[in-house]
Image 1: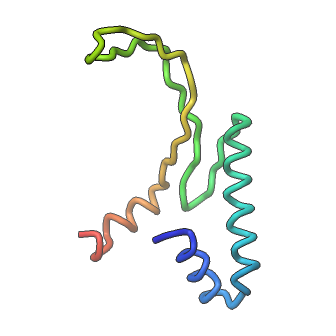
Image 2 (image 1 turned 90 degrees about the vertical axis):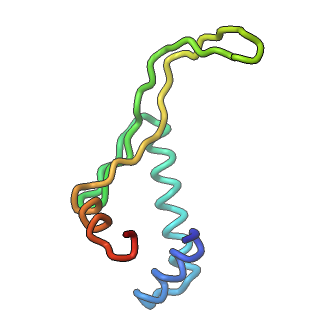
Image 3 (image 1 turned 135 degrees about the vertical axis):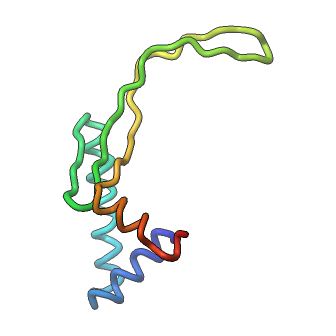
Length: 96
């Protein structure tokens, strides 16, 4: 499912104009990106959490050149689904 499919489905279910739904969806994604870029985590009850995970400093190897390089400590975005979300997917007939 693409972002356009999500927008169309929300518009069909709510009766709101597709352009208004698109603005809302884009605004949501913008808020999520900006908040996480500022180091804030986002918790949506019943859906899941968007969190920044810390990756420790490590030494990586380039096998073809036989060299080592240091990858500094950094943060990566992550999504952790809620228990309700996980149970709904687990019990779904279409996923199995």
